[in-house]
Length: 90
Length: 90
Length: 90
Length: 90
Image (cartoon, rainbow over all chains, first blue to last red; front, side, top):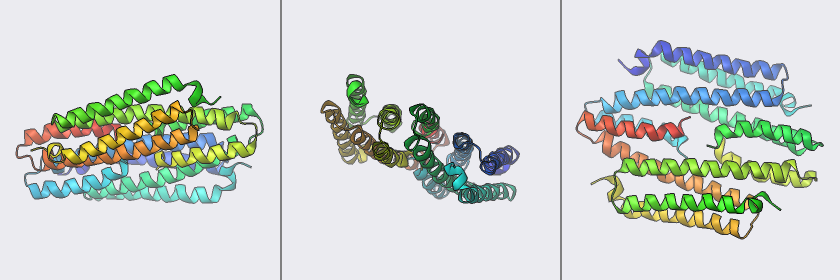
């Protein structure tokens, strides 16, 4: 069973919290809040998103690469990982 | 009128699109999709979030700093901007 | 006098330290060190570079934008800042 | 033979180019250049550093994780990788 399945409840809770943070941005814009407040809300989503992504990356690395028995499988999972990492390491 | 008010409709549309992207992550987790797919969805949210943040930052910089007539006002807006930038430039 | 002139000695010391860190990567590669070590050295340069860049950005923002008396001058300095920020906020 | 050994000449050339870029920052500060120029030079170093780091990460991932025969070895190399990635994914 994959880590995103095993950790499903915990990951879903984080995603739903981020959806709530997005709704806070929506309400701030609708209420014509200060743009300093909007920037702060966006920065906090960035932090939450990076935390969640880091966790999924770590699970992927361990489960689909470290623990995979066949090199073919590891190779494919590494390609998937690198395509995500390229958006971070640049 | 502040840029986040003037651009309200456009910014709200982007925030709602990102909420939709978050819901796609939610559905992928619930459907026990491949974690490679989850990582890709998260990476695309990161791109959308950065695009939106960049736009709000640019509006803030021009409106509350460049166009502000008093130095006190510019100073306060610059502090707000730096506190957000510190989460990016590190 | 510009902040990069006023802070010249301090900024130069940081740049030289980073050059030293780059030379440590050079020596590690020449000595055929573990690549884990090379990655760690590169990660520490990234931190130092971000710290220095953040400082130059903050100085630029205060001196050439907040304290500038003419809006034309602030506008030009803001464009310079945005072109650098776009490489960070993405 | 490790990827950082096999690619030694190419990696060293990149590191030396970056050292040259650092020296350009040094000269710009000494010559009391515009701080916009200093920021641009720093942004270009950031790009070069990310490119080099991405290459070392990819080599590490393939050589020490994908191609490693023992799970113990893969596990240790994955920990090294994650400690570097945590500085990027945040």
